[in-house]
Length: 226
Image 1 (cartoon, rainbow, N blue to C red):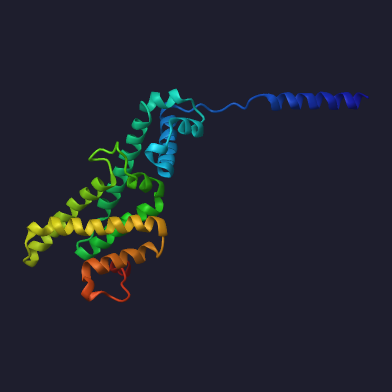
Image 2: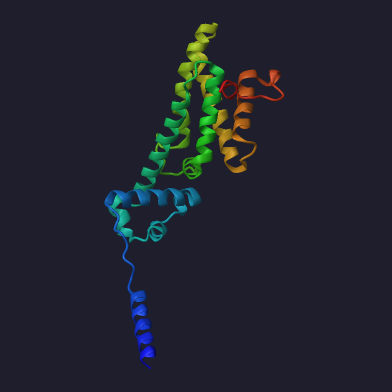
């Protein structure tokens, strides 16, 4: 009987302990902000701006809606922060990649940088390519590619001058090249084949050699040297 009583007390104590709510570590304001940005980024990528609700962001973050309003002022504010981060991340990645002196290698580096971003930061890229009525002129995928185009323009202008071409045409060619890479990147976002190195090689093959001189099996000269 004593053993049964002891067992009963142990079970009761265990049930009481299980009933107690587990204590959660409180996030700092900065940690909470980063959590909300991460969750917002994912939902905006999945649904787009219009179909995303503050209720869903709050639910996934396990917070109340006022917490989101406190940090961002609403869905628009959260979206603006997410887009701004992705714009800067993509632009930094591409411009940092442009290090080689040879124009063909620069094309390879730009194409690979964009495809690598798509591969590693898929959610962020989806946010950028989903057009939104709230997108400012400086806060969308087109504006990012336009910025990259201007940097490529300076490179092409110098190259045109040394080869006797009209440097005024550098802007036209830079926009054409960057646009081709960007649209191919949007297509590759969904299909994911062939491999990004192969896609980059064929992009450079077309832009560098032209349709009349395409290589049957193009490769990346940057990879060959490495």
